[in-house]
Amino acid sequence: MKRIIRKYGPPIFHCINDFGQGSLAALIPFFIANFGLNYYQSASIIFCNTVVASVAQPILGYVADRWRVPWFIPVGFTVTLVSISAIALATSYEMILALSLIAGIGAALFHPEAALLVNRTQSNELGNAMGRFAVGGSAGFALGPLLAGGVYVFGGQFLWLFTVIALIGVLLYVYAFTGSTDTDAIGEGKSSAKSTNNGTNDWVSFGKLFFVIASRSILFSVLSIFIPILYITVINGEASASSLALTMYFAMGAVLTYMGGALSDKLGFLKTVRLGNLIFLPSVLVFIFVPNIWGFFGAMIPMAFGVFSQYGPITVLGQKYLAKNAGFASGITLGLGITLGGLVAPYVGHIADIYDVQTALMTLIPVGAIGLLMSFWLKEPK
Image (cartoon, rainbow, N blue to C red; front, side):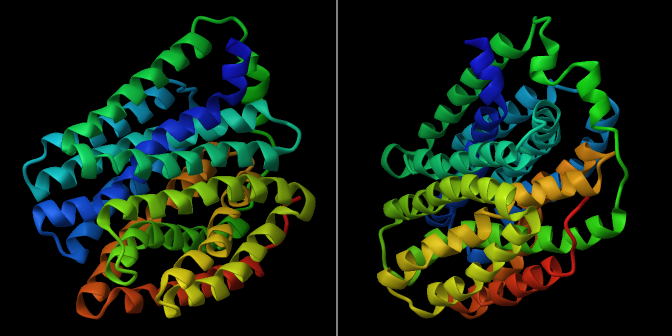
């Protein structure tokens, strides 16, 4: 039993951590209805969740390169989920912002060390292994909105379910990853630790990759926020069903993330990233300019492929470009790859306040184009 949990531990814990991250976007309509927020204020909740994490994740990734800090994993997802639960006690917009910020700190603690665990324990089919890890996060983003949707039925107290999930995760971690002499199985052996420090760093290529990371992050964050809002305001759907629309999007993303990881082992990491951007651009045009239920759901599958298929390949590319600092690379690819877009989201929300949601979403077109162009400027790592 322990060996099974060790094998699938990274994606399981990634799922648990991203329950909290994924739930925030689904709670936006709840915050709008109960606190009278506009789109800019709503997007600022995501901004607070990401701003500290965006600064902290590269630093924590460097720490993970220098010292083994496995306890970052359970502490990280516990801080994230307990903070989401505590939103049930929030009595003001400022309190929601503070709890969102603390949840971001938890995510920053979790990602670098968890990604290094995958890197140390998988020597073959790394794209597939990182794909499984990424699928765990995508599954968390899918299930988070589904669970958060319970607030529309049971009220804010329903959010304490996230604390229960965190407790289950901690018990799993303690059972399988502590008090064992079989350290190599969980990535704590000396030989595996040394392997992450071999090779050379290609900072020029990693710098170019950063633009691809930023592009995908913006696409991910803006769509996560505006899919439920578009569903309510343009498609005229029910607020209680908006979280289901987001869950459907993230559920597709979980499958397509795994497909992207498997595809990268066959096509190559860069070709998979380029393919994702090529498919995303026409599908997002349909999503924006066909404002009905057919355009909304019809564009969702190819749009999800464009965003999610890149996740695993980008992470592996970062670790290969910075072979000596895989923890730092993971802090950027996994950390900023999720959080960086949240820094832009309030400005997209401001455009939606001035004009409308569809006009705001048009900002995704040049962002996706930049990601595509920059991916063709990169070369496959040796």
